[in-house]
Length: 480
Image (cartoon, rainbow, N blue to C red; front, top):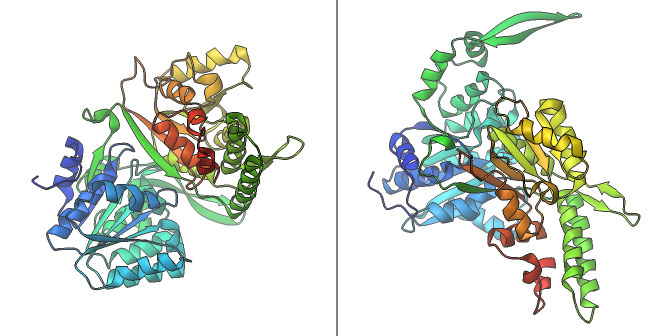
């Protein structure tokens, strides 16, 4: 395909674009780390250049949607494509309101609205998108389309209805089936109600699921007990989708880095600001600021970002936060064994309890200071056994970052980071070492405009945090 790309596509990305660029509806079922975002950006650019669209609506979960405006579009949209990007906010600032208003100006530039999927459960969000679609020839895309797999959810109903007013439609996800093959129905319905051949979820269910009637007291209900005709379903889905797995992409780099944003709750923001203001006053009062004192303040702020704070007695108190919820969303999008690195024992215990409730006690284990010595090697052996059902290993880099081999994992999630560069590099190499046959995806959970973001940036840039905060009041850039 001849096109002036801003970033050169990999072979599998080019193949995805060739198959889909002029299709009215298409699904990119591409595993996390294979670059489906770039394919969509290029598809939008090609259609805009051909004069068939003048706008796009990109829908994504809260933890992802700002990545589109801040990273994916600037990184991959060709420079010759003049565009204006507006990011949805239900209560916009004056500047944000101007950006959203410009989406409706009659100009030749490409208008792109980036909006979180949760907004489609609100009348305000639905009304704004409807107005946008009615005034533009738009492509509408849902990133992580399993967020609309529930046919009863209001956001699903809203998006399926709004899709009818768009000229082109795309869905993107690594794994379209997270619980059952029935997950496919509303994802395909968003693209086009005719794709699977059923205009009702229940007729679709009756054909592909084995359903029996049950009674509980006076209540009667129908329960799915199995599935059928799945080869037929697979064939139908293949007609409008392209499947890509990391293990099949020989052209991908060995390490693929992803970022997921975690929004602070109002309670976190309030406590974070209080501690930040105190830290600045405390450090400003010192004649000579030491690395230790700066790192201590950074640590306190980082703990708040992760969802807890220590009181004057040294006791940890939970703060309402979104981090664990975002982790669970990430784990739904990946397949295979996964290492979860968490910096604090508080986080490790919380993650362990939640995952045990969801996947069972045998599917998750820990490897940290609180793990008895006699249990550690058996846990590693189980995790390294491809036939074992131990899927998630939760560890901290202080204990698990050195000397052990975990190459059965092809996914590594940093729930929270240690700001020691050596520990980060060592922990990355637990999975990426001799014996690894897959590409490894590293996913950082990050809260924007906090020390969390600055720590990860320093680690990614291979910078020592201790050196970074020294000299010329650099610490103020970190704390402030």
